[in-house]
Amino acid sequence: MSRTSLFLPLGLFLLMAFMLWRGFALNDPHELPSALLNQPLPDFQKTRLADGAPVARQDLLGTPFLLNVWATWCPTCKAEHAELNRIAARYAVPLVGVNYKDDGPAARAWLARYGDPYRLSVVDEDGSLGIELGVYGAPETFIVDGDGIIRYKRVGAVDRRVWEEEIRPVLQNLGLPLEEPPA
Amino acid sequence: MKRVILRALLGAVLLALSTASFAAIDTYAFETAAEEARYKALIDELRCPKCLNTNLSGSDSPISADLRRTVATMVQAGKGDEEIREYLLARYGDFILYRPRVMPATYVLWFGPALLFLLALAFMARLVLRQRRAEAPAPLSPEEQAALARLSQAVGENSKA
Image 1: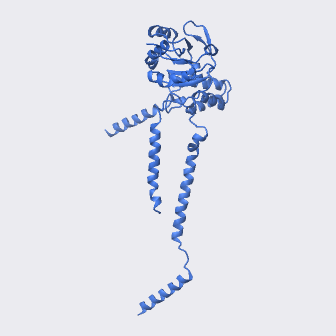
Image 2: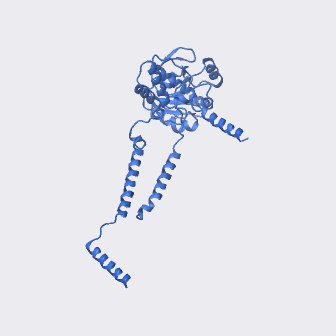
Image 3: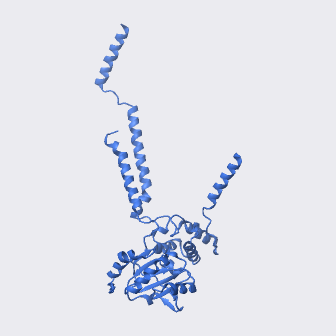
């Protein structure tokens, strides 16, 4: 055995250590890379939560907006709700809700009780729009641009940090005026 | 006493095994047995997006139930396996496939084992060849043979004396 080949085990060990280090530094394994990024928002024909009026994909387009998948059975949705209310009150970005696999009356009562940040909520009772959107865990939040292309996806709660560091810059890039209103 | 312990152990093992994967109890009516077989094969090889390591057939989560329904509906509508996989892939990404596609990011996964096997073969071949060479030493050169003859003659004379 030549002298250099004595270093083989050390090399293997370093390689393994490096790969494990990289592997464990990966983000939350629950977080799936979204397949829908830069894809068009899927087409749908649904109804509005407030009054049952029909609503389709075309009705939402025009300006960039936030699409937020929520449900009354989802505790994290409740946790992020205050932040959504704050965003809706302070910034000029429309929020559209997708009431995902929920009970209509319960959802309306929930919005009446905790406040309604949404321009409208789309009723997705059977979860079919959820499947089209690749939803696997509410809450999920998408940024859709004026042409109906999905520009961002977040699985999990939107909080102050996510808004400031992730969502707001994307919206500003899309040309939404999001100055801080005078306090 | 021993028997009781054995039985308890056996019971525990059986219990542990029983939780494995009988979550999917929803039934769909298929026109042919072939369609049903395709449905079962698909939900076995597609992965539940909410869970880290469970297939659609083994998961109790609502999203898996929805996706099973989606797969069933598509199979009933006569869609091909590849079409169904593509449909879910476009929405949930590669995570949904337990059998990853062959692409640059998965080359290591697909070809790594074969490569390692070939490497091991090459290594073994080298070892064996080296050993063979050690067992069968090279034939002596004429000078060496002459030296050997001299030496053995000298040894012979010594032993006679």
